[in-house]
Image (cartoon, rainbow, N blue to C red; front, side, top):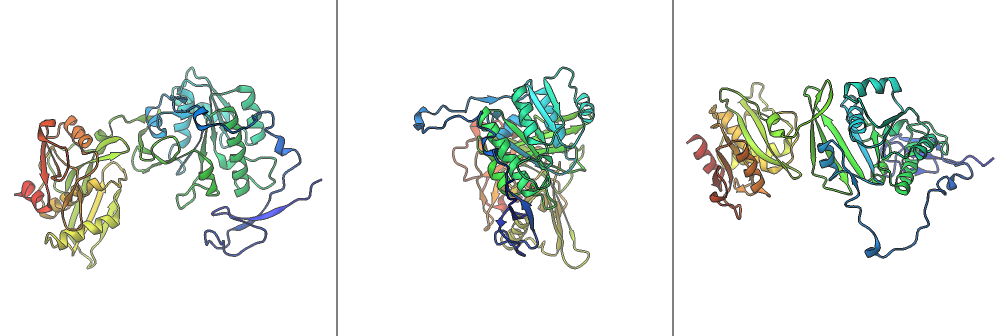
Length: 452
């Protein structure tokens, strides 16, 4: 019998050491090293010998492109975030809060994609999955269920079944016989992912992994897990809202700026094709402190509602709160209004909220935030069917934003009458659009148009 070999691994970053250390030299965390067995039985190196091909160098021109070799799913939002569909031989990792709907989303993909799918669950029984599948309307689906946590058994069944796509729920529940530590440990997660990765690359079967997250919001396990996979997606949302957002954090086959929007319902996840409808409130009467911003998420233009409230600080120290917007950028915009424009709002509470529970880091909503704050401050509503698409600089100037044509077209499509843009936007003329373009260079010019 081979001698058992152990090492110490940091539970935060995966750094290994031959002896126990109080502080991790890699990430600086304290008391995170645990001992794990790392010795492998004999013959494990030949586990994939029958699947591996003989590798030889190829000239770049001889390598065939994978751009066309994608599996198109029935979920258009998922396809958009992936960059056009599932690439063959790719590994995708999806993380998110407990109960946010990760399993529901991927089971919906499995049963309604039209592909031969193998859904592997280490957390639920087949009966539980069947109940959820019936709720999703899976009447005639080519989806196979497997409740298994041993990677060797999973790969054995996959080799016999030959599915088009494999979904694993979740990677933290799997274990391999080559490592003797407990499931969910650093070495188990790393080795299980490595075995699935080798299988996917040699057979061309795309694999989607569900990953748990820590209390800090990071995916549980070693950081190298995110480096090993091809795509990392984040499924997020507010429990108080029915909308869920699928963001791309890493994507080797597409853009990392794409966003998919879903609505959680009793029958599963409903795709939201026109997000502007859910992000703008419909009120009969006009309210102060509300402005509409034209933003972009990836290649998708959206109109979102910015809500602001300013009031006299009742407890001495003014409060600054932002929901869905960068708080530091809010401080910067308030400083610009105070210093450059002469508005005395330093002793007032300021609250900012983006309707719908969405988070936006696009600087093009700066002008909408400023106008919403000033509208609430003077208690005068902004004229309806007016939107904004411009960045605000430190000197109070209105700066242009990229791809402003798409933003203008989206506002025009939704029936807006005018849009405020920077006068420095190049190549934009009134003749191109039916919506009225209001080109401004300073915040003072915007206020003249809005409040007279």
